[in-house]
Length: 217
Image (cartoon, rainbow, N blue to C red; front, side, top):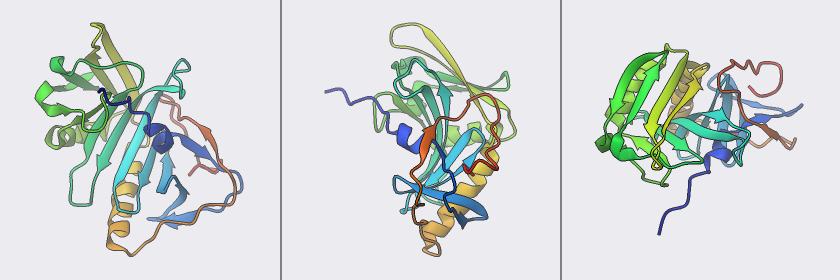
């Protein structure tokens, strides 16, 4: 039986607008608690860590035609402070033909051709995990970049290319690494939820968003 399409990132990746809610500090950043995650918002990215110290840094590609308002996600995840960051790519609406491999481009410069052997679907049929060694190489190229493009072939035969903004990635990763270490050590605990009910709005994918002053960071 086909595993259901992955849409859990909707809860992990949608930006939160909180008005007048008190936010606590972790690793010198104001943080918020939602869905049992500790979060910060860094321009195009949301960084989140669970109590067990599993952390993700996520961005989206907006698409009004998609049920949740976005068509694709790019995630960097790390299970613990000793692990390397791993890339997860999701096409919410279609299925990729992993046999043909993927290609990643940073700022119009080809970075990686990812073979089918480096791609797995450990959770859902449309959530594509890239092996850590390849992910680590892509991340080192992505940190100084402005945008990253994912090119691949759909199972229906068409080619697809989606671009994500990298604005805010470095800050998001630095916070996640610090928070992950502190949460794993037990020296910090997740903050208590704020009293205000948050409203959701997805991040803009290609236009830098500075959340300072509107309660999202």
